[in-house]
Length: 456
Image (cartoon, rainbow, N blue to C red; front, side, top):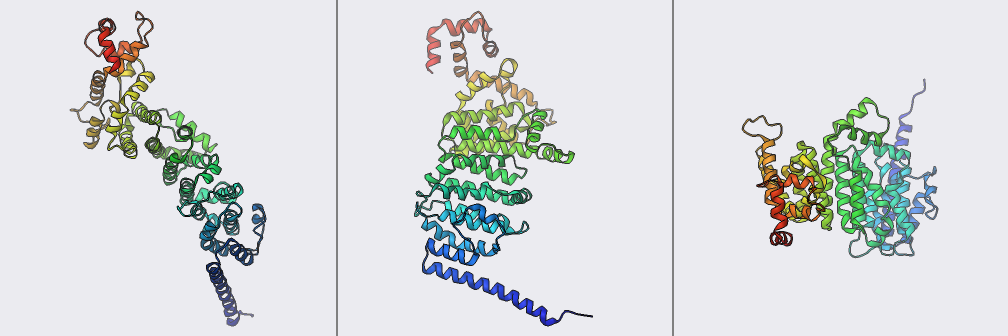
């Protein structure tokens, strides 16, 4: 019976040790060469010699079956990135070299390896404007090749990303850092593709990925050429916050197509988490926007949510606190008071008849809502001494009575025929002393008082 000799086993072990030692020696020699002469030419020579590739070939060349060690490619990428960053000019292709090294490390590693989705942080670090060296002369081809690290995963990489939420979070974080921290030239190259890559992650099933995307999109508002377009497209892509369950079901089915019973239940289970992501995203967008009209419109979205979903009114208050702090206010009460006139205009235009007087506490009395929240009262409270519906009704009436100078004059100005009053005007005047005819006579016939109201 033949048995394996111990000597042959030790021989193979020595061979493996020699191979590993050789790799380390080669990498050390490469580091020494880069330290002696840190240039793009040195990096290209080392990469082509150690990896056996031609860095002038197109990107598709590195997807073929080349006998390349992915660990060697990743190790080279890590210590040559600063050199490539310092050598970037309009005539060189440092960004292209980095993109090729990252692609080699990814394509030649197995899906089980951490190197299969390697390079997000390295490409982001290359793009950052450190104040000493900028990428103001980066070529269009280099900018496109760098973006491929985030935008062009193959089928195997997409599957790996779907199974690894921690890597999806790294991808979202690194892309946002690269876009915000880069100079205007690189951002101009990525302006169209960046929203397309970030927005789908707002609907990710992992809350950490959604959070990273929300912060990334909000931080990029400061460097975007058109904030309104970014805000509008983001608000269209966030998970819906609605009281209609059918709307939510239609939304997640449009994302996932045909779902099993377990798949549908998974989306239903994270509905509250998705809605909270939407509220946080709105708060960050509103706080980072420098357009006052955008801030008012986003703030009114919270009022709408509080009106149709009383169970989320406390979450809306906390999100408005975040909105206020990012915008430079202490609490939600401060920014709501600052935007009060605009919010009233939106409310009167949006709601009619009985709904007009059902103002949520978030708008009518945010301080009362905060008191109730801190004392753990809710619409589910069984405390007989507290009738929340009565509290809301009373706060709403007091709110309109306190702010009549901002509410009634616009409605009177838009009144074309006094004999056919606006329903909203009748509803609002009913909360003051006297009936509609008496208020019409008091506000319209007295021109002095009417003029003072308009000029207030």
